Image (cartoon, rainbow, N blue to C red; front, side):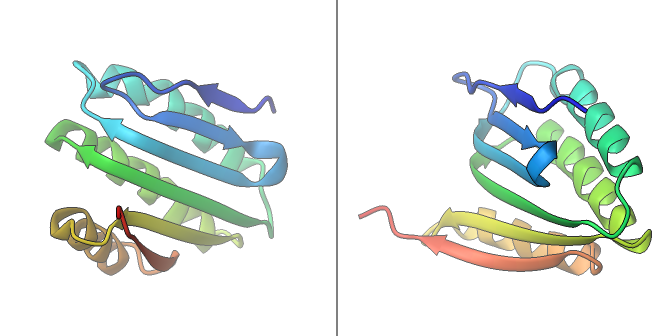
Length: 129
């Protein structure tokens, strides 16, 4: 399966899914005009990749400085796919990066951790100084 790379824009994150290395990264801000249209092909390729994995250790690095409510729904779809992947024999290490002073992003990470218990979350506060 080919890797997936989408460069960041002012309103959408960089997507760097290196399927050959089992490394998935989202970085930047996410408030595209149509989040469903932006994320649908990404989620489709992710699900296709995950369906081909068995007993694989997957690392996901998420460093989103901001995301709107429609992006939140799409992010839940991504995390749901990863959570289901663990239930079918893979492991997922989620590195959640956020500004150490950004309570909203921190709390969203905690919510994800509570909702998707099969994923191994690690919180990474980042200093902006």
